Image (tube, rainbow, N blue to C red; front, side, top):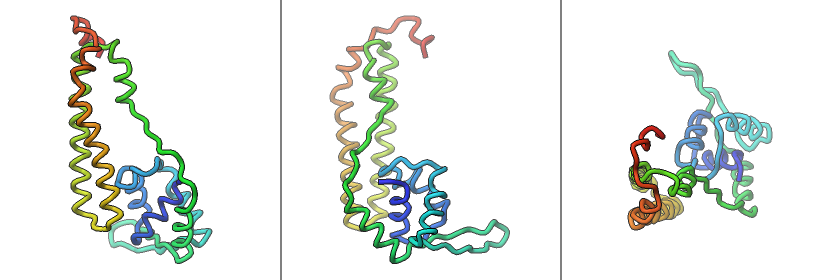
Length: 182
């Protein structure tokens, strides 16, 4: 899946400005699906418009710059659905947290405890975000995807909670120079 497909997916649900598409795909709910950069959204929209898969109109705003609003065309809807028939790529998962934990045996216990606590806070925030999304989205497909994501995050939280002692035990006992390393 690529940025082009995500742009079509967002527009499949309704009109959006380039800014809204960028926000949804980079830091919003579509950021869970692919890694899109800020610089890739507008070129993708321009190509989609050239291919007549999307159209745009300029809306003048009083006291503000005009905004360009994109809409998906019937050909764009068809192209999007057709893209879902293509073989899916493997899910990618990268985690600085896991790299850190891999070397827990080289680090002071207090730092490992701190990073675990920070991670729990991050996971709790993500779980709360999933709960918020669940209330906002009523489409059955959205609900299933949100439940899947929430279940994965809850499993990660539960695993950290159940096995944190084991990881902390792997770490080095704190010494006076532990704070200096941070």
